[in-house]
Length: 432
Image 1 (cartoon, rainbow, N blue to C red):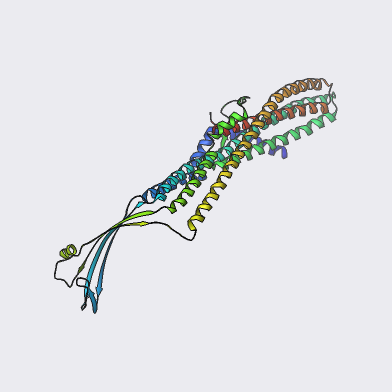
Image 2: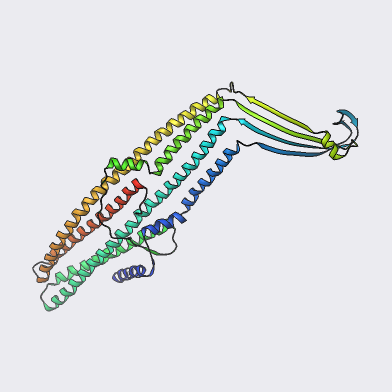
Protein backbone atom coordinates (compact mmCIF):
# COMPACT_ATOMS: atom_id res chain seq x y z
CA UNK A 1 0.00 0.00 0.00
CA UNK A 2 2.79 2.40 0.93
CA UNK A 3 4.61 1.58 -2.29
CA UNK A 4 1.43 2.30 -4.25
CA UNK A 5 1.11 5.71 -2.59
CA UNK A 6 4.69 6.55 -3.56
CA UNK A 7 4.07 5.52 -7.17
CA UNK A 8 0.85 7.56 -7.38
CA UNK A 9 2.56 10.60 -5.85
CA UNK A 10 5.42 10.45 -8.34
CA UNK A 11 3.05 9.93 -11.28
CA UNK A 12 1.05 12.96 -10.17
CA UNK A 13 4.28 14.95 -10.08
CA UNK A 14 5.08 13.88 -13.67
CA UNK A 15 1.53 14.66 -14.84
CA UNK A 16 1.57 18.11 -13.28
CA UNK A 17 4.88 18.90 -14.93
CA UNK A 18 3.45 18.05 -18.34
CA UNK A 19 0.05 19.73 -18.06
CA UNK A 20 0.65 23.12 -16.50
CA UNK A 21 2.03 26.36 -17.84
CA UNK A 22 5.75 27.03 -17.38
CA UNK A 23 6.81 30.23 -15.63
CA UNK A 24 10.33 31.65 -15.62
CA UNK A 25 11.78 33.77 -12.83
CA UNK A 26 11.24 36.86 -14.97
CA UNK A 27 7.55 36.03 -15.43
CA UNK A 28 7.12 35.45 -11.68
CA UNK A 29 8.60 38.84 -10.87
CA UNK A 30 6.62 40.66 -13.55
CA UNK A 31 3.38 39.08 -12.38
CA UNK A 32 4.09 40.00 -8.76
CA UNK A 33 4.93 43.61 -9.64
CA UNK A 34 1.63 43.96 -11.49
CA UNK A 35 -0.68 42.12 -9.09
CA UNK A 36 0.68 42.15 -5.54
CA UNK A 37 -1.70 44.01 -3.23
CA UNK A 38 1.03 45.40 -0.98
CA UNK A 39 2.75 46.88 -4.05
CA UNK A 40 -0.52 48.43 -5.21
CA UNK A 41 -1.21 49.85 -1.76
CA UNK A 42 2.28 51.34 -1.47
CA UNK A 43 2.01 52.81 -4.98
CA UNK A 44 -0.96 54.88 -3.82
CA UNK A 45 1.41 56.82 -1.55
CA UNK A 46 2.83 58.53 -4.64
CA UNK A 47 -0.62 59.77 -5.62
CA UNK A 48 -1.25 60.81 -2.01
CA UNK A 49 1.90 62.95 -1.87
CA UNK A 50 1.19 64.34 -5.35
CA UNK A 51 -1.99 65.80 -3.88
CA UNK A 52 0.12 67.12 -1.02
CA UNK A 53 2.23 69.11 -3.50
CA UNK A 54 -0.90 70.62 -5.02
CA UNK A 55 -2.10 71.55 -1.55
CA UNK A 56 1.24 73.16 -0.70
CA UNK A 57 1.18 75.28 -3.86
CA UNK A 58 -2.40 76.20 -3.02
CA UNK A 59 -1.14 78.21 -0.05
CA UNK A 60 0.35 80.71 -2.53
CA UNK A 61 -2.95 81.60 -4.20
CA UNK A 62 -5.76 83.73 -2.73
CA UNK A 63 -8.76 82.33 -0.93
CA UNK A 64 -12.16 83.76 -1.85
CA UNK A 65 -15.72 83.36 -0.64
CA UNK A 66 -19.23 84.63 -1.31
CA UNK A 67 -21.83 85.30 1.36
CA UNK A 68 -25.52 86.12 1.09
CA UNK A 69 -28.42 86.16 3.54
CA UNK A 70 -32.12 86.94 3.76
CA UNK A 71 -33.44 88.24 7.10
CA UNK A 72 -36.82 89.21 8.59
CA UNK A 73 -37.03 91.58 11.57
CA UNK A 74 -40.29 92.29 13.45
CA UNK A 75 -41.20 95.05 15.91
CA UNK A 76 -38.66 97.64 17.00
CA UNK A 77 -35.69 97.31 14.67
CA UNK A 78 -32.76 99.32 13.34
CA UNK A 79 -33.18 100.63 9.82
CA UNK A 80 -29.78 99.92 8.23
CA UNK A 81 -30.23 102.75 5.71
CA UNK A 82 -30.61 105.47 8.39
CA UNK A 83 -29.16 103.62 11.39
CA UNK A 84 -32.20 104.73 13.40
CA UNK A 85 -34.72 102.68 15.35
CA UNK A 86 -38.13 102.23 13.78
CA UNK A 87 -41.21 100.22 14.65
CA UNK A 88 -41.83 98.12 11.57
CA UNK A 89 -41.36 94.76 9.95
CA UNK A 90 -38.26 94.65 7.76
CA UNK A 91 -36.95 92.16 5.24
CA UNK A 92 -33.35 92.67 4.26
CA UNK A 93 -30.66 91.03 2.14
CA UNK A 94 -26.93 91.36 2.47
CA UNK A 95 -24.20 90.21 0.10
CA UNK A 96 -20.46 89.95 0.55
CA UNK A 97 -17.49 88.86 -1.50
CA UNK A 98 -14.15 88.58 0.28
CA UNK A 99 -10.67 87.41 -0.62
CA UNK A 100 -7.52 86.86 1.38
CA UNK A 101 -3.93 86.43 0.23
CA UNK A 102 -0.79 85.68 2.20
CA UNK A 103 1.64 88.03 0.50
CA UNK A 104 4.60 86.69 2.44
CA UNK A 105 4.96 83.54 4.53
CA UNK A 106 8.34 81.84 4.13
CA UNK A 107 6.99 78.65 5.65
CA UNK A 108 4.78 78.12 2.57
CA UNK A 109 7.82 77.85 0.28
CA UNK A 110 9.51 75.39 2.63
CA UNK A 111 6.37 73.25 2.78
CA UNK A 112 6.33 73.06 -1.03
CA UNK A 113 9.91 71.74 -1.05
CA UNK A 114 9.06 69.29 1.73
CA UNK A 115 5.99 68.01 -0.16
CA UNK A 116 8.13 67.37 -3.26
CA UNK A 117 10.62 65.44 -1.13
CA UNK A 118 7.79 63.36 0.34
CA UNK A 119 6.69 62.35 -3.14
CA UNK A 120 10.26 61.48 -4.14
CA UNK A 121 10.64 59.40 -1.00
CA UNK A 122 7.39 57.57 -1.80
CA UNK A 123 8.91 56.49 -5.14
CA UNK A 124 11.89 54.90 -3.39
CA UNK A 125 9.67 53.39 -0.69
CA UNK A 126 7.76 51.63 -3.45
CA UNK A 127 11.04 50.28 -4.81
CA UNK A 128 11.90 49.00 -1.33
CA UNK A 129 8.63 47.04 -1.16
CA UNK A 130 9.24 45.65 -4.64
CA UNK A 131 12.76 44.59 -3.66
CA UNK A 132 11.53 42.82 -0.54
CA UNK A 133 9.07 40.85 -2.65
CA UNK A 134 11.65 40.10 -5.36
CA UNK A 135 14.07 38.66 -2.79
CA UNK A 136 11.36 36.30 -1.52
CA UNK A 137 10.47 35.23 -5.06
CA UNK A 138 14.10 34.56 -6.01
CA UNK A 139 14.71 32.53 -2.86
CA UNK A 140 11.57 30.43 -3.31
CA UNK A 141 12.14 30.03 -7.05
CA UNK A 142 15.60 28.54 -6.64
CA UNK A 143 14.43 26.39 -3.74
CA UNK A 144 11.95 24.84 -6.17
CA UNK A 145 14.76 24.21 -8.68
CA UNK A 146 16.85 22.57 -5.97
CA UNK A 147 13.95 20.38 -4.86
CA UNK A 148 13.29 19.37 -8.48
CA UNK A 149 16.93 18.31 -8.88
CA UNK A 150 16.62 16.30 -5.67
CA UNK A 151 13.68 14.41 -7.19
CA UNK A 152 15.76 13.55 -10.25
CA UNK A 153 18.58 12.27 -8.05
CA UNK A 154 16.18 10.22 -5.95
CA UNK A 155 14.56 8.75 -9.07
CA UNK A 156 17.96 7.90 -10.51
CA UNK A 157 18.97 6.14 -7.30
CA UNK A 158 15.69 4.22 -7.19
CA UNK A 159 16.03 3.05 -10.80
CA UNK A 160 19.58 1.93 -10.13
CA UNK A 161 18.49 -0.05 -7.07
CA UNK A 162 15.63 -1.68 -8.97
CA UNK A 163 17.98 -2.73 -11.77
CA UNK A 164 20.23 -4.53 -9.30
CA UNK A 165 17.24 -5.92 -7.42
CA UNK A 166 16.00 -7.69 -10.55
CA UNK A 167 19.46 -9.11 -11.15
CA UNK A 168 19.85 -10.33 -7.55
CA UNK A 169 16.40 -11.93 -7.60
CA UNK A 170 17.44 -14.04 -10.60
CA UNK A 171 20.77 -14.95 -9.02
CA UNK A 172 19.07 -15.96 -5.76
CA UNK A 173 16.74 -18.20 -7.75
CA UNK A 174 19.80 -19.78 -9.39
CA UNK A 175 21.49 -20.15 -6.01
CA UNK A 176 24.35 -17.81 -6.92
CA UNK A 177 23.50 -15.21 -4.26
CA UNK A 178 22.46 -15.38 -0.64
CA UNK A 179 19.01 -14.20 0.33
CA UNK A 180 20.61 -11.68 2.67
CA UNK A 181 21.74 -9.66 -0.37
CA UNK A 182 18.19 -9.77 -1.70
CA UNK A 183 16.78 -8.60 1.62
CA UNK A 184 19.26 -5.71 1.74
CA UNK A 185 18.33 -4.61 -1.77
CA UNK A 186 14.62 -4.81 -0.98
CA UNK A 187 15.17 -2.73 2.14
CA UNK A 188 17.20 -0.24 0.10
CA UNK A 189 14.45 -0.03 -2.52
CA UNK A 190 11.98 0.82 0.23
CA UNK A 191 14.33 3.50 1.55
CA UNK A 192 14.82 4.91 -1.97
CA UNK A 193 11.05 4.98 -2.46
CA UNK A 194 10.69 6.90 0.78
CA UNK A 195 13.44 9.33 -0.25
CA UNK A 196 11.63 9.96 -3.54
CA UNK A 197 8.32 10.53 -1.77
CA UNK A 198 9.90 13.04 0.63
CA UNK A 199 11.57 14.84 -2.29
CA UNK A 200 8.30 15.08 -4.25
CA UNK A 201 6.39 16.34 -1.21
CA UNK A 202 9.08 18.91 -0.48
CA UNK A 203 8.95 20.08 -4.09
CA UNK A 204 5.17 20.43 -4.02
CA UNK A 205 5.33 22.38 -0.76
CA UNK A 206 7.96 24.74 -2.17
CA UNK A 207 5.81 25.24 -5.25
CA UNK A 208 2.75 25.94 -3.13
CA UNK A 209 4.68 28.51 -1.08
CA UNK A 210 5.65 30.46 -4.20
CA UNK A 211 2.16 30.22 -5.67
CA UNK A 212 0.72 31.58 -2.42
CA UNK A 213 3.26 34.39 -2.40
CA UNK A 214 2.20 35.30 -5.94
CA UNK A 215 -1.46 34.74 -4.99
CA UNK A 216 -1.89 32.35 -7.93
CA UNK A 217 -5.03 30.25 -8.11
CA UNK A 218 -3.85 28.15 -11.04
CA UNK A 219 -1.10 25.54 -10.79
CA UNK A 220 2.03 26.38 -12.78
CA UNK A 221 5.54 25.00 -13.21
CA UNK A 222 8.52 27.16 -12.32
CA UNK A 223 11.47 26.55 -14.63
CA UNK A 224 14.91 28.18 -15.00
CA UNK A 225 15.49 30.18 -18.18
CA UNK A 226 19.04 28.98 -18.71
CA UNK A 227 21.68 26.58 -17.47
CA UNK A 228 23.31 27.65 -14.22
CA UNK A 229 27.01 28.24 -14.80
CA UNK A 230 29.55 29.31 -12.18
CA UNK A 231 30.16 33.02 -12.86
CA UNK A 232 31.80 35.00 -10.07
CA UNK A 233 31.62 38.79 -9.71
CA UNK A 234 35.16 40.09 -10.13
CA UNK A 235 34.76 43.49 -8.44
CA UNK A 236 36.07 44.04 -4.93
CA UNK A 237 33.72 44.40 -1.98
CA UNK A 238 34.70 48.07 -1.63
CA UNK A 239 33.85 48.80 -5.27
CA UNK A 240 30.54 46.97 -4.98
CA UNK A 241 29.67 48.96 -1.86
CA UNK A 242 30.42 52.30 -3.52
CA UNK A 243 28.30 51.34 -6.52
CA UNK A 244 25.46 50.18 -4.30
CA UNK A 245 25.40 53.47 -2.38
CA UNK A 246 24.14 55.19 -5.53
CA UNK A 247 21.51 52.63 -6.50
CA UNK A 248 19.87 51.14 -3.40
CA UNK A 249 16.38 52.62 -2.83
CA UNK A 250 16.51 52.18 0.96
CA UNK A 251 19.64 54.36 1.08
CA UNK A 252 18.12 56.99 -1.20
CA UNK A 253 14.93 56.98 0.85
CA UNK A 254 16.97 57.49 4.02
CA UNK A 255 18.83 60.42 2.44
CA UNK A 256 15.58 62.07 1.40
CA UNK A 257 14.13 61.51 4.87
CA UNK A 258 17.12 63.42 6.23
CA UNK A 259 16.37 66.29 3.84
CA UNK A 260 12.75 66.28 4.96
CA UNK A 261 13.83 66.61 8.58
CA UNK A 262 16.12 69.49 7.59
CA UNK A 263 13.16 71.22 5.94
CA UNK A 264 11.20 70.66 9.13
CA UNK A 265 13.87 72.59 11.06
CA UNK A 266 13.72 75.39 8.47
CA UNK A 267 9.94 75.51 8.67
CA UNK A 268 10.05 75.85 12.45
CA UNK A 269 12.58 78.70 12.10
CA UNK A 270 10.33 80.46 9.59
CA UNK A 271 7.88 81.05 12.44
CA UNK A 272 10.25 83.74 13.69
CA UNK A 273 9.71 85.68 10.46
CA UNK A 274 6.87 88.17 9.91
CA UNK A 275 3.90 87.33 7.72
CA UNK A 276 2.16 89.83 5.46
CA UNK A 277 -1.50 89.44 4.51
CA UNK A 278 -3.77 91.29 2.11
CA UNK A 279 -7.56 91.39 2.29
CA UNK A 280 -10.27 92.72 0.04
CA UNK A 281 -14.03 92.60 0.35
CA UNK A 282 -17.03 93.95 -1.52
CA UNK A 283 -20.42 94.12 0.21
CA UNK A 284 -23.89 95.60 -0.23
CA UNK A 285 -27.40 95.22 1.14
CA UNK A 286 -31.09 95.69 0.36
CA UNK A 287 -33.92 96.75 2.73
CA UNK A 288 -37.58 96.62 1.75
CA UNK A 289 -38.37 99.85 3.72
CA UNK A 290 -36.81 101.83 0.93
CA UNK A 291 -38.72 102.72 -2.17
CA UNK A 292 -35.62 102.35 -4.32
CA UNK A 293 -35.42 99.31 -6.54
CA UNK A 294 -33.43 96.25 -5.55
CA UNK A 295 -30.68 96.89 -8.13
CA UNK A 296 -30.41 100.57 -7.17
CA UNK A 297 -30.04 99.78 -3.48
CA UNK A 298 -27.31 97.24 -4.16
CA UNK A 299 -25.47 99.85 -6.20
CA UNK A 300 -25.93 102.67 -3.69
CA UNK A 301 -25.11 100.55 -0.61
CA UNK A 302 -21.98 99.05 -2.14
CA UNK A 303 -18.90 99.03 0.11
CA UNK A 304 -15.27 98.20 -0.66
CA UNK A 305 -12.64 97.17 1.87
CA UNK A 306 -8.93 96.80 1.16
CA UNK A 307 -6.56 95.88 3.95
CA UNK A 308 -2.89 95.09 4.44
CA UNK A 309 -1.62 93.56 7.66
CA UNK A 310 1.73 92.44 9.01
CA UNK A 311 2.23 90.05 11.90
CA UNK A 312 5.61 90.12 13.65
CA UNK A 313 6.17 87.30 16.18
CA UNK A 314 7.68 88.53 19.45
CA UNK A 315 6.95 85.97 22.15
CA UNK A 316 4.74 82.88 22.13
CA UNK A 317 5.61 81.13 25.39
CA UNK A 318 8.74 79.48 23.90
CA UNK A 319 6.58 77.39 21.56
CA UNK A 320 8.60 78.22 18.44
CA UNK A 321 11.93 77.81 20.21
CA UNK A 322 10.88 74.43 21.61
CA UNK A 323 9.58 73.30 18.22
CA UNK A 324 12.92 74.20 16.59
CA UNK A 325 14.89 72.31 19.23
CA UNK A 326 12.68 69.24 18.83
CA UNK A 327 13.02 69.41 15.04
CA UNK A 328 16.81 69.53 15.40
CA UNK A 329 16.75 66.46 17.63
CA UNK A 330 14.64 64.60 15.07
CA UNK A 331 17.12 65.62 12.38
CA UNK A 332 20.02 64.23 14.42
CA UNK A 333 18.08 61.01 15.07
CA UNK A 334 17.39 60.62 11.36
CA UNK A 335 21.06 61.26 10.57
CA UNK A 336 22.03 58.42 12.92
CA UNK A 337 19.38 56.17 11.39
CA UNK A 338 20.83 57.02 7.99
CA UNK A 339 24.25 55.83 9.12
CA UNK A 340 22.70 52.68 10.59
CA UNK A 341 21.02 52.03 7.23
CA UNK A 342 24.38 52.23 5.46
CA UNK A 343 25.95 49.93 8.04
CA UNK A 344 23.12 47.42 7.61
CA UNK A 345 23.58 47.57 3.84
CA UNK A 346 27.32 46.97 4.11
CA UNK A 347 26.69 44.05 6.46
CA UNK A 348 24.18 42.42 4.08
CA UNK A 349 26.44 43.08 1.09
CA UNK A 350 29.57 41.71 2.76
CA UNK A 351 27.72 38.58 3.92
CA UNK A 352 26.37 37.97 0.42
CA UNK A 353 29.85 38.58 -1.01
CA UNK A 354 31.50 36.10 1.37
CA UNK A 355 28.76 33.48 0.97
CA UNK A 356 29.01 33.81 -2.80
CA UNK A 357 32.76 33.24 -2.67
CA UNK A 358 32.36 30.24 -0.36
CA UNK A 359 29.55 28.72 -2.42
CA UNK A 360 31.60 29.19 -5.59
CA UNK A 361 34.52 27.28 -4.10
CA UNK A 362 32.14 24.61 -2.77
CA UNK A 363 30.63 24.25 -6.24
CA UNK A 364 33.99 23.75 -7.93
CA UNK A 365 35.26 21.35 -5.27
CA UNK A 366 31.89 19.58 -5.27
CA UNK A 367 32.17 18.90 -8.99
CA UNK A 368 35.56 17.26 -8.44
CA UNK A 369 34.18 15.27 -5.52
CA UNK A 370 31.23 14.00 -7.61
CA UNK A 371 33.62 12.93 -10.37
CA UNK A 372 35.73 11.03 -7.86
CA UNK A 373 32.72 9.47 -6.12
CA UNK A 374 31.20 8.53 -9.49
CA UNK A 375 34.36 6.68 -10.49
CA UNK A 376 34.51 4.96 -7.10
CA UNK A 377 30.85 3.97 -7.36
CA UNK A 378 31.23 2.62 -10.90
CA UNK A 379 34.18 0.53 -9.76
CA UNK A 380 32.28 -0.77 -6.73
CA UNK A 381 29.18 -1.44 -8.84
CA UNK A 382 31.25 -3.48 -11.27
CA UNK A 383 32.66 -5.52 -8.40
CA UNK A 384 29.15 -5.93 -6.99
CA UNK A 385 27.96 -7.37 -10.30
CA UNK A 386 30.91 -9.76 -10.23
CA UNK A 387 30.19 -10.80 -6.66
CA UNK A 388 33.44 -9.31 -5.35
CA UNK A 389 31.61 -6.79 -3.11
CA UNK A 390 28.58 -7.47 -0.95
CA UNK A 391 25.41 -5.36 -0.86
CA UNK A 392 26.65 -3.38 2.14
CA UNK A 393 29.74 -2.22 0.27
CA UNK A 394 27.65 -1.35 -2.78
CA UNK A 395 25.15 0.69 -0.77
CA UNK A 396 27.96 2.47 1.04
CA UNK A 397 29.44 3.59 -2.29
CA UNK A 398 26.01 4.53 -3.62
CA UNK A 399 25.21 6.64 -0.55
CA UNK A 400 28.59 8.37 -0.77
CA UNK A 401 27.83 9.30 -4.38
CA UNK A 402 24.36 10.51 -3.44
CA UNK A 403 25.78 12.62 -0.62
CA UNK A 404 28.32 14.16 -3.01
CA UNK A 405 25.65 14.88 -5.62
CA UNK A 406 23.37 16.44 -3.01
CA UNK A 407 26.21 18.57 -1.66
CA UNK A 408 27.00 19.71 -5.20
CA UNK A 409 23.39 20.65 -5.80
CA UNK A 410 23.30 22.55 -2.52
CA UNK A 411 26.49 24.44 -3.41
CA UNK A 412 25.25 25.08 -6.94
CA UNK A 413 21.96 26.65 -5.94
CA UNK A 414 23.41 28.39 -2.91
CA UNK A 415 26.00 30.01 -5.16
CA UNK A 416 23.48 31.02 -7.78
CA UNK A 417 21.07 32.47 -5.23
CA UNK A 418 23.83 34.32 -3.38
CA UNK A 419 25.29 35.57 -6.65
CA UNK A 420 21.90 36.84 -7.80
CA UNK A 421 21.44 38.41 -4.37
CA UNK A 422 24.86 40.05 -4.56
CA UNK A 423 24.19 41.54 -7.98
CA UNK A 424 20.78 42.65 -6.77
CA UNK A 425 22.30 44.40 -3.76
CA UNK A 426 24.59 46.34 -6.08
CA UNK A 427 22.59 46.99 -9.27
CA UNK A 428 19.06 46.66 -7.89
CA UNK A 429 18.10 44.09 -10.53
CA UNK A 430 17.99 40.31 -10.88
CA UNK A 431 17.07 40.23 -14.56
CA UNK A 432 20.04 40.75 -16.85
